[in-house]
Length: 332
Image 1 (cartoon, rainbow, N blue to C red):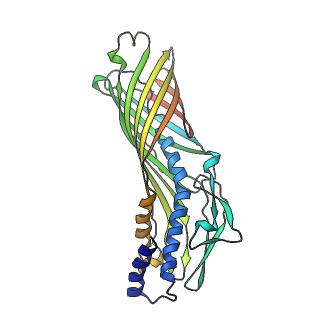
Image 2: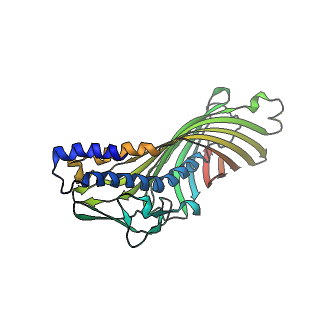
Image 3: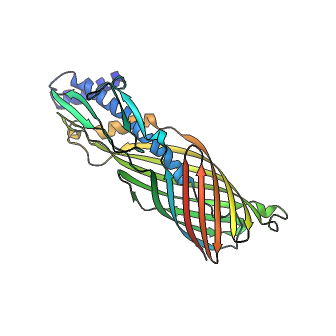
C-alpha cells in the first residue's frame, strides 16, 4: 500500500504543485490510511445494528386471509444500543500519520457511542494538522417511525412494503425501506386451520442508510472534504413464522436468517484540496476494502391483539443485539 500511495501522489503533486516537502506525498498517503482505519472502527457498529433495526416487525400474521385484503400500519422501532459497541480504543501505534494529543492511547466513541471527543494531530506542509474525533448518536435507544402495508394476494401470498422518512438522530440520519413476499404453508396441512395454528415463510429485501458527520480535516493544501460518511446496508431476509391464535390474541414466533451487503462512502461538499487531489474518490475506493458480507440469525417473538379492525402489534427481536417494535395496523 505504501508504494501505491507514493506512486499516486507523486504523479498528482509533480504535475500540479511543487510540494513544500518531498515527504508530504508519502504523508498524505499515510493520512488517508489512518482515515480508513478510523472509518472502519467508527461506522461498522452502527451498520451492524442497522441489520437488526431493518429485520423486525415485518409480518403481522402468517395466517392466510381473503385475497385483496389490505392492512396499513404505523410503527415505531426501538433499538437498544449495546454497551460493548459504543466505543473503541485507539493507540499511537495504530496510526502512521496521526498521534493522539497528550496521550499514547484513548477510548473514543463509535457511531453508536456518546459525544466525548479527543484530538489527533500530525504535521503536513510545515503546518499542524489537528482534528476532533467524531461523536456518536449519544442515545440509549435509537427510535424511528415507519409506514408498512400488506396486501393479500391469491394462493396464500402476501405482498409487504415498508418505508420510513429520513429520521434525524443527534449526530446523523437513518432511513430504511423494503418489500417482500410472504407465503402461507399451513394451508397445505390438514387440521391446522381448525387448531388455529399457522405457518408461513417470507422473503424480504431491505435497504438501510445511516449517515454521520465525520472527519473535518484541514491541511496546508486545503480541507480534505471527508466530513460526511454513509453506511448503506442491503439485506435479504428469510423468515419462518409460526403463530397460534388465542381468541383476540395471536402469538407469533419468527426465525430469521439474513444476508447483508455493506457499502461505505464519504460524501457531502468536497474539500478545497480536490483542486489538487481527488480525495473523496480515493477514500471511497479504499473503503471497499472494509466491505464484507455478513449472515445473521435472529429470533423474534410477536404479540398481536385484535380490536375490531385494528391490530396492536409488539415484536421483540434478539440475537447479537436487541430490538423492540410497536405498531398499530388497520385491516381493511
